[in-house]
Image (cartoon, rainbow, N blue to C red; front, side, top):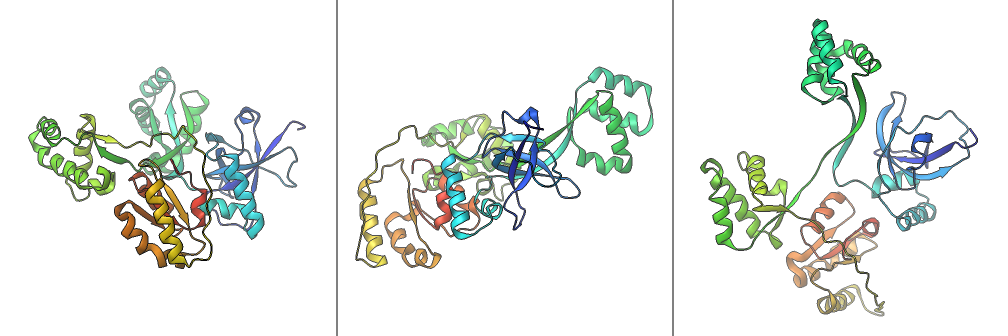
Length: 360
């Protein structure tokens, strides 16, 4: 146990006054376990699968029995700089770091961890199918037809007998149980060309059944700010919208929008504005942004209180129009969507400083 490592972990969606929850790091994961890494752990009396972040690694064993980390599902998702900022905020404002991380660092997708069955020995499963009957044979057939299937979906069909059969299949090497992160990704889409004639020509190649709906989707994109929209808005109230969108993306008429990585770090200049009220300071900031903000760059203006943001929001809106995004500290996903949709000037509360905003 001298070489044993333990991870102090913040657990997703758990409200607790505890700073961190401690888990043993198995030797098989010791090389990958780093601060900021996202892990799967068994949590609570029922060992419910949860994800969380490693915020501390120590050789000092906790004064209680600990469970083990099950898997590492993401390399470190935030930098040392963000970790130091989290620690500073936690210590300065006396906020338990578990609560702080849960409030500030969320994934951009709706995620959960589920157990899945993976079929790993087809020949052996065929032998089970041919030599047995009843529920066991039915289960073997499912594993032969579906290489990857959730245990949750099997429970609805096999109920109480499932655990016994899964253990038997697993012990014989027919299947493996995997911890899998299930997520619904929010796609941001853009039109591939601004040439209407080229777009129409490509749409005319789509089957007549879906052509009008394909044209409607393309028109929505052409009319959107920067010709960029999220998938939900793009196909809203369009029959078979997902299928039609897949047709358009398969023909590269519509593309998934990707951020360009900011490989260049520029020097920056610090300027201060004294002896002015909030409105006058805002006007001076706007004047500087209109002169210096590049077409691919973004500006973040942070307000200590929501009420201050509300007072000057209209001033910024007159200057930047549809390029303006505002965020008051709730529903972080909405801010991320606005950034992906091409908003370049962002008015926000201090929590926005914990987000990685490209080209800021």
